[in-house]
Image (cartoon, rainbow, N blue to C red; front, side, top):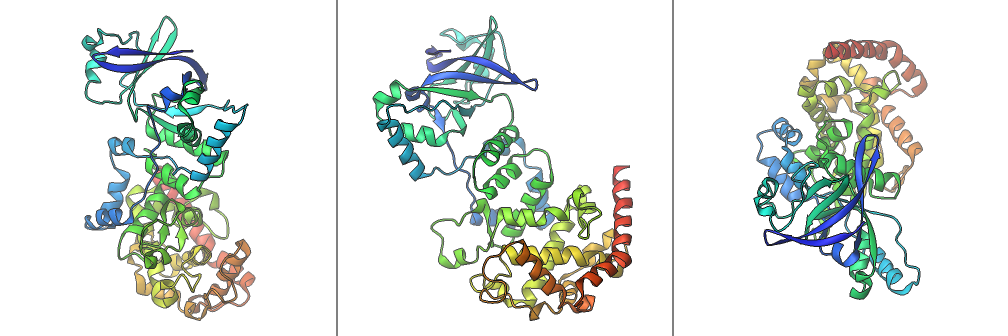
Length: 460
């Protein structure tokens, strides 16, 4: 495998000789290149989240449903322009630079995994000084970073414009950043193994990034959820919940407005009062909500109460509205919601416990208030949830209270049980085992039967 520099239509290209590998009928390619050549053409663009920008966008829509529809129908061009890398770790880069510069056996035998934008599928052609007359070249005349993939005599070649930002790195950014800080002499004599995953759209590439960096390394889970949600063309559970969290975080009248640490981090250079309200991570809120729409929860004491709405895409907004109204009621009953520094109610453990309470009491609400009619969920307003949650005001959510500032699954269960034992709507049950038995006999069976019928009708 070799790389040579060629000129076509007064533009310089790197011509990579590729080795093709097939896995499950799909191809990726390996190439060898000198570090100094590759460092000139790669890009690593950190994923970013700007609450102010997204809030302005959300406020430009007349209501939540219109904005939600916008989020799930954004065109392919928007998806293709998004970024999905991590912010570089300066300490790690410094260690890599030192390793490369000082160690005698400074090997990086693992691959740099990359992607580039293609103008064509495999074609029997090549670029040279006469390629300005080639139809493929004419198509690529405007996009400055478009690449060409070709096969000639059973050999594969990739033509890459020899200019910045033509190759997008999926994995290996820290090695490259470390090499950039090494001497030019090292760069000129340092071979890199590049794996090109090309010919696929960004949703496939994002999933590759997710698998590589989540399954094999410790990477911020919120970032990974952001990437999967943003880049997926298909609406799955994770994408839906990602958009749900975005709406809850971006609408100014939402109880979660400005409360979610999108990408799992606190943004820099924002006022302290804004930082203080960032009380729950994107990943935690998504994980806590997942069972509400998961088929795996069917038949459990906490069934997927919103699965019927999730399966009917036109009713997705009902899930978001119900969650927002429920927590609006929490906010009105418990002023501590606005003081995350002193209270856990709007932090991960408090929010998760409250979602479990909603999960448990919803079948009762479904039978008694909605009269077993799914469409009646939109009739449940904030005052109704205030009535269902009367008694919540007597639960001590203070950080110096009985639950502490952080907690485990056991702490979340304790909070959930304490809330249930205070709710007047369900009779302040002190024997929760007996309460769960009564719920199962009087309400869960009815709810589950109605859910099964509703899902069957959607399939039909």
